[in-house]
Structure formats: structure tokens, C-alpha cells
Image 1 (cartoon, rainbow, N blue to C red):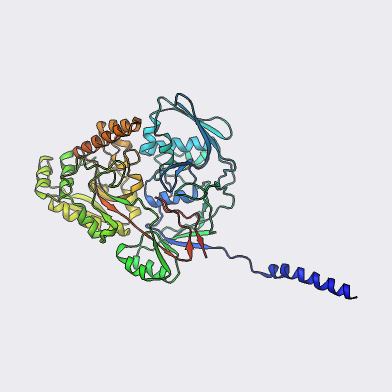
Image 2: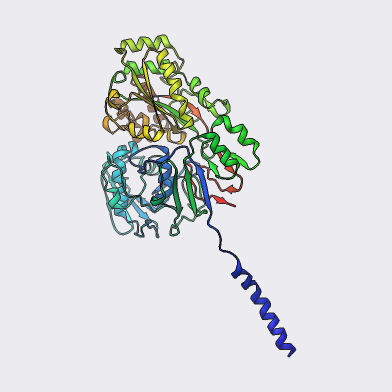
Length: 526
């Protein structure tokens, strides 16, 4: 009897933990709520270079190669690759387990179709594809690219952080490059919830349960992309003070780019940290439309290089010198190709020189249409400052205000400025995309194939191609100087200084990855 009682008690003791475990409530899904720098109204990261669309691309698509946290090229979807002894044939093998969100496996045919569409739109893709004889699937896991001549840009092109050839299903990638895709199926760590997308309100992503990450730790845009939250919501909240109040109240978890003059408020909140994930910073860009007067004339464009000055812009928007840098090097101060060649005497607001050049360029007093973004704080004050400096330089300026996504759509139009087009727009680009002439899309001068503004110059195109083919570093630096001297003579744009941002993150959110692009894998929320 005693033995029976003891046995029963022991059995009950062993069963108790299981019973308690069974009574535990199921784990609640974790939702990360983020205010990004812009609302999402366009969803095709090949059709546009807008950073918010690029960021969306990294959520749902995967890439063949990627840059790690030290900007070193690493395989991502690719398991291995080989190059023939003559450097003309590149053979790539995909990793096992790659699958699109619709359940279909990723195939080399999908990859080849995606690369071909990307190469039409992207400047570095265009340079690479001039050397391609063919790109084709070899078998169920392998594709090859055959070149006319060896090039050192293959992996750089496939790993570039902005303008990356995101891999899409073949049926989607066969959409003409000039048209936007209408189906948003990737193979990345998150799935886009098209049924919950509300432009002006929120964009929703959920964890991809079938995603097979790499085994390496997350580093930059490379390594293991492990989604550690179940759901990510990008919330449209254009008013910065409203966003900061929501962050302080715990209603949101992250502000991607809080306004610099609000940093002191954020620093005082013990529940919030300021984290710089893009350590390479950003560069401001003043872009000319060269299809129409007055900036179809190089003298008029030169006038702006003399009439503008970087400090007015940086003080007017960033404010704190801790977060900005005046820099007359096109390819970033602190970068491997830093030089002021061609620009040492520019950006000093020499209005007399600017007026002289405008006169030489035949400016006739027609108002210049300047596009003004009103909902991105890092750009909102830029156009009014530009308007004042342009007018002091002798131009009449018609500043037209709109939200950023409207501006992104309008900048693609080639209509005359008085018929819905434009003469000048201001944007910014990542420092990691600005370190050399290949990734720096604004120096591309390939006419209709160039970035919006469509500069057209055979010499710049030749020099950029020469840089791509050159392997000697000393010679590359000489070519960079020649590029800058030519760009000062026939400007494609003005560059208006460098600045850094910090993310504002609640301290119960950890795992942010140092990367030139804001990414949301590896992040945990407690």
C-alpha cells in the first residue's frame, strides 16, 4: 500500500510540470512598429532608386551577394562561384532551400530574368552588361555569365547596397524595365502583406516561416537574415514631434531618421537610445535636368557650383556640426577616392561669378522649376535655401511643393518644366553608395539611360568605363581626378555636403545591424 502511494505521488510530481506547461498561454506574436523616413507609395525597387523603396526591397527580396558590416562582398543567395582561367566565364551555384513566398523554388531562370531587367535600369548594371555575351541557366541550381572581356566589377555590381538586383520570379522580372511590377513576391525574410497596405497609413510585413538564412552571423546586408519578430509595421507619421511623442509613450518602437533638433529631447529619455547604424553617412545632391533650358547649357550648371554653398544647407537642415561635414570631394571626404580636384574654388556663394556664367550661358529670365519635398525633414528646408541662393545668383525660381513620393513620380517625367516637368530637384544619397564612380549613379552620363536629369557626356562615360576596367589603384585615383575635373566642366549635379543620422530606438528593442541600409532582421523586442 505504501509503495503504491509513493508511486502515485511520484507520478503526479513528474506530471505536474507538464500540466503547468500545458496551461501556459501561447506566445503572443511580436510586432515591431517603425516610423520610416517616408511613406511607401511605390513598390518596385528596380523601377525607382528612392531609398524607401530600396528598404522595402530588402524586406521581401533576397540578393545574390551583399556587403557586410565592413563593406566587404559576401555571397548571399549564392553558395559558391567559379571563374574560368581567362576570366570570361563566371559560374554561380545557388544555395539549397531558396523558395519564393508563393511556394515556388528560386531557379536560375528567375535569377537571369531579374538580372536582365535590373541591368536596363541600374548604372553599374549597364556598365557590366556592355561586357556580357550571354547570361543563362545551366541546370536547376546553376547559372553562368559569359563576358566579352574580363572585368573587375562583376561582384561589385551584384553586391551594391542601393540598386541591387533583387531576385524576383521570372514571370515578374519579365515586366518591361520601364513599367512598374504589379506582383510583389520575393524570397526574403519577410512577406509583404498587400492586403494590409494602406498608403498614407501603414505598410505591413510578416515573418517568412520558410526562409532559410545563411549560417553566418548577420553583418551589414550579409550573413544570416533571421527574422526575430513576427510582424513589422511601417507607420506613416510625417510630423516629427508626433513621432517622438509616440516613441516616448511606447506606441512605436523605432524612428528611422528623427529630426536632428529633437535629439536633445530623445537623449533625455532613459527608455530611448540613439543608434547610428549607417556609419558611412549621407551626401546631399542638387540635380539638374539637362533636357531643358537653362541647364541644358553647361555654363548655367557651372553657375550653380559657384552660387551655392554647402554650409547654408547643412546649418539650415542638420544644424549641429557634430552631425555634418562640409566637403568638396565628390566621392566623400574620408573615402578611398577623396580629392577636391575641380571643386576647390566652388561652393563659396560667389554670386558675381554665378551671374556672369548665367549670362554666358544665355539665361533669358524664364522661371526655373525647383521641386520641393515637404514631408522628409532632411529635405524639407533644402529647397527654400536653394531658392534663395539661386535667386541671388540671378535665376528666377518657381518652387513647387509636394510630398516625397509625388516628387519621386514626377522626377521620372520628361515633360517641359511648364508642362509638369522640372528643372532642379534635391535629394540625398548614402555615403556607402558614393565612394567610387561605379556605385555613384549621379555621375553616370549615358543620356536616356542615366539617372533622372539625363546628363549626356561621352567623356564622362569613357572615364567611368576606364575606371571599371582599371585594376591598378594608383591609376584608378588618377582617373577619379579626371572624372571630377570633367564633372566640374560639364556638371551633372552639385553635391551639398555630408551628414549623419541616428535611429531612435526604444531600449527594449535590441539587435540593430550596422548597415548602409536600415534592416529589420536580427532585431528582437522584449
